[in-house]
Length: 356
Image (cartoon, rainbow, N blue to C red; front, side):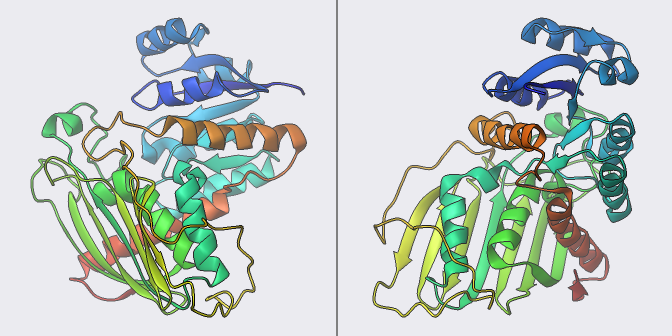
């Protein structure tokens, strides 16, 4: 195989990002599209110059891999069908909305010898990767706190635009499961995993089943603590923000760009704060600098990180062509789901401490 033929399943808000990314990847080709509403598939197919298929089987018969751009609660159901058809799978975030469904999808990939990745495009953002490498290297010293703030805004019209939005069954949750999952993933990835949470959630300003405001106190496996805050109620929407503090310094990322980089150049580097002996790649030569924030998704759900999607889809294409694991596997993608579900359990128990 010299070219991976991709099919898009679901022609909603995110499908165009996948199509545009695939058009700019050597060795990848968008071959066909499918949606349960055939007219939507026809519109997408005409836009991107590919046929619209009338059934999943017809799509599967013409492609090597699929991008699942369907409601979150359908990821495992449709992904398992793709796996049984022998198709590699790119799944939009989150991997699904329950652990059982996520585990079933991962197992289906293993059983049918197909590759699975779940979109977490911010892991491909240069500044975020540098932050993680710096934390892992011990340059920040012992990690003390890691915070993630996703204070976004969505109108009621946004939730009304799709029957699945804001529902437990298909959205799986609200501001954390849908909008916040990427940054929950980033902070747990950077900090070395979450041990426990204590949380409060509210449905404060929308007519939906799920939360639009959430705050969680977090204890990481390393012993560090932190805060995860998510919302779709804060007008006009603020840039997402990561803050990591260690005994040797602090780094703040806003909208995938470094806002604060303050590391004591005279502090001793005692190695990985996780005790793993992990070596980091080179870090920036400067220890304090500011940059303009990126667009992010604070107020506009279409303000997407297209280049990071392209990088992840390029990695997945190469994983197929060279028969290696993708950079982000299903097993890695299940971690932020575990954290969010633990937050929901804690909120239902009036903020009780819940193990992840």
